Structures are given as structure tokens and as C-alpha cells.
Length: 207
Image 1 (spheres, rainbow, N blue to C red):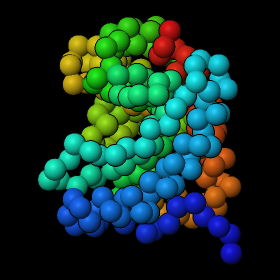
Image 2 (image 1 turned 45 degrees about the horizontal axis):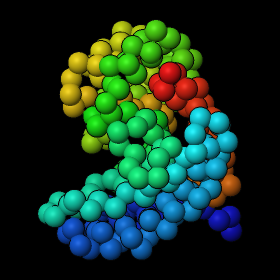
Image 3 (image 1 turned 30 degrees about the vertical axis):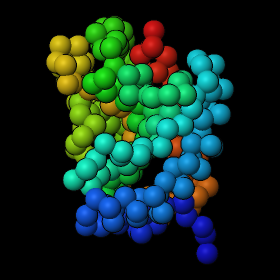
């Protein structure tokens, strides 16, 4: 039987009731896989030559009541903290997996990032048709870049520039059923391919 990387058991972590019980399930089922992905892909991102990338597995340490509805490993060129920097993520919601480049609200250069991306929208519109964009990492809903179009992308990027809480995410989503059906080799190849397509966007983001 072909070995898969993800299982239904991984995604069902987000169905576990209660903060403590869900955190235990996350720590036992998912975080070891995120650590493995961190070790695998930090060298690939570092080899791009724009700084050494370090993996950061989400700990959800600030939560005291509500259990997390998603989790991830992030990659950024900093040993401590990543949220203020453009960063990559591999993560899960209960419904799907995501591989993204993220500029979230803590980033101090959102105005500059917005302007650089608006000057060359083709860096986004030339991505393959299954790539998505979003303006909020707290929500699972996204839009296909092809459907968003230039006008929609400009709206998202202007919001990134003007609204304190606005964000910009670009990447790929993989439905839960597709993710658990992929062999480990297929998933790792899919992830590597996604990062390779996103690295030129990252170059533009950091200027």
C-alpha cells in the first residue's frame, strides 16, 4: 500500500472538542509532521538565495478558551518570529490543506508591498489557474486568481495598503480528500512545485 503523508485522522483534529484536548491532538498527530516539513523545506527556500529560512511550527500559546481551527508551519528568514515578515506556510484547516505566501497584518511594510505588486500584477495573474488569493488568514474562504482578475487584485492590494488589519495571501489549497489520497512522494513534490512558483512573487514582495 502506498504511504500517504496526510490522513483523515490529521484533519479530524479540528473536530476534537475543547482547547486542551484539541491541543493534545495537534501536538501528537500534526506537529511532528509540521516539524518534518520544516526540516525538509527550510533548506529549499534558503537555497533561493534571499536569506536563510527557519521553520516555525504554530504553538497557539496565546489561546486560553477557543481551540484553534487551523494550524501550520511557517517559514521566514528569521530565527525568532515570522509574523512581521513575508513568510510561507504549509497548514491545515478541517476542510483543506494550504500552501501559501502570506503578508499578514503585523507586517510594517504593507504599503511598499502593495505598491510593488500593483506595479507588476502579471507576477500574480501568470500563476497557474489553481492558485488562490485571500485578504484574511483567519478565514478559510479564498478566491481563484483567475476569477479575481486585475480589478479584484488591485482592490485586495489597495486594502492591504490602507487598512490596518488587511492581509494578502497567495498560494494553493488542496481539498482534504485530495490531500489524504496523495502519496507522500506526490505531496512533497506538489509542495516543492508550489514554493517554486511562489518564490518569484516573494522576490517582488521583498523588493
